[in-house]
Image (cartoon, rainbow, N blue to C red; front, side, top):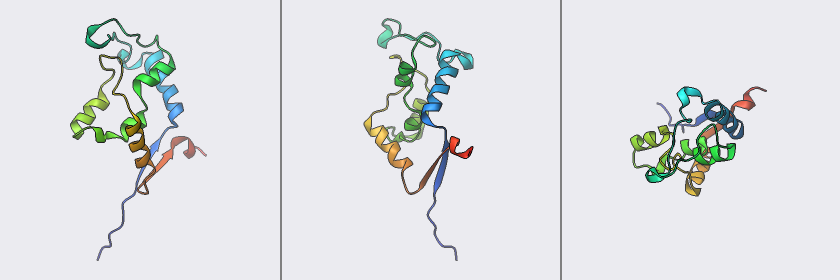
Amino acid sequence: ARSQRPCRYFTIMRDPISRLISEYNYFCKDCQEFNRFCQHQYGGGGAERAEICPNISIIEWAERTANTYVRTFSPSRFPNFEEYRNAKMQYFSDSGYMWKVNGADLQEAFQKLNSPYMLPILLEDLDS
């Protein structure tokens, strides 16, 4: 007879700050992947033009893109996977931002990553 054992998940992730810096340099400063983040953007309702890559600071980049890990581990604000996937795959909205994360998103991601069923591993820790 088989016994029921709890499942445990693991995820390998880069250091969030290192990832943010790398992402900024690659997508914003170097305009890689067919200028994916370096295209014209306009304020909400077609108003004045928002600053775009490569002309924004790393602080603005961080505010616009939100933390990748928070977005990945806090999908419950979306009623179904399709809406979550679409939101996660979009670049910037008309207001110049990806969907903004809030305190509830951060808390949900934190709880998931600190769950007894999850083992987050930093890629940098594997180098040792």
